[in-house]
Image (tube, rainbow, N blue to C red):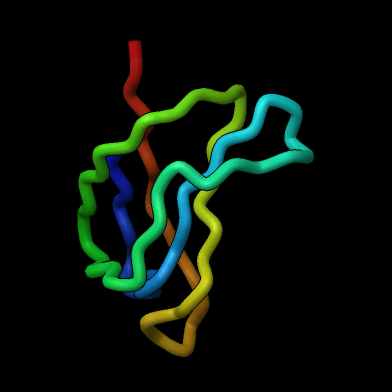
Amino acid sequence: MVLNWEAAYASAFQIQTSNDGTTWTSIYSTTTGTGGTQTLNVTGSGRYVRMNGTQRATPYGYSLWEYQVYGS
């Protein structure tokens, strides 16, 4: 998975998946987010994928240009 952050990035966040959009499972968690382009090795499955920010690195919230999910 690749996250492409704008200047407003998360210093702590989780990547979560869900099959139904209601129940979410965390497949990645960090408290040392760096911003920029982050490549994450994650394992999991689900129909939906989201980034759940838990700590902002700047006062401006969270902003992703895009995130890319790769799988087989």
